[in-house]
Amino acid sequence: MNILITGGTGFIGSALAQSLIGQGHAVTVLSRNPESVTKICGAGISALGSLSELKPEASFQVIINLAGAPIFGARWSDARKQVIRASRIGLTEQLVESIAHMKVKPELLISGSAIGYYGDQGDTVLTEQSASRQDFSQQLCADWEAAAKKAEQFGVRVCLIRTGLVLDHDGGLLQRMLLPFRLGLGGRLGSGKQWMSWIHRQDWINIAQAMIADPTMHGAYNATAPNPVTNNEFTRTLARSLNRPALLPAPAWLLKNLLGEMSELLLGSQRVIPERLLAQGFRFQYVDLAGTLKETLSGSTK
Figure 1: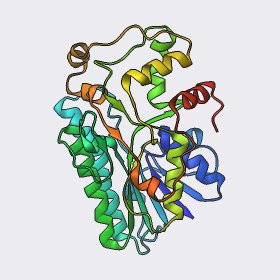
Figure 2: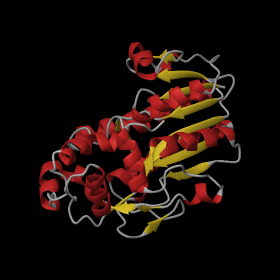
Figure 3: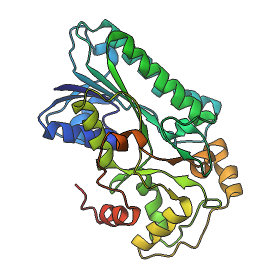
């Protein structure tokens, strides 16, 4: 297949691009720095610098939309929020407009989202059918999904992938957490009672590949392992995996003072279950956090 990935140089996108190339697909990556695509994603991948370069004659069977400015990159000022929204919603709207002008429409659009779609919901078990609680992250994800679903009017099958906290050895959440924990300076965040719904990057890639292979898949799917854990359990498990103590909690008041509204990413709680994937028989490779961290931290995960 001919596949276009936006955001293909990121932590998830680069690994996905390499996997798809390995399966014999032709992959094009949209990047603001197209000259860096081969270095980051590997040989054999084409680069596109802007959606304006897409001609009506362009033909992709699958488009995977992962573009977006880092949500944890800087304090959420009004200007930063606008950057975050424009990089997701604005680009998705441009992508759908590009689809509208393609002579041959893609068969499938897989568009990114996040479990922030549900908002902060404490201990409530959340499935794809659960109601959401409004905050900035929830509105961002809802608007992002709504923009992607507009591709359906052109006969495109749309899958929305609500991603949890993605784990692997070379980036993502673990990259941020490893240094303090290796120094013995890690600990729970706030009360530690908030739920963390995680997923290994390879399982995320497998979900995307299942969406490509199975034409019956459509709509929103939770991309999280079946066993979410509390922040307290996650931090203790990570510390044990590194043979370090987890003795230095970060109080909620401190995180709120340091990060402002962005602290909801650390203190908010989403206890998410991948109900639709499980119902369709999807088999996760990584379901146990302790085993996942042990393998991931060894750097041996393929």
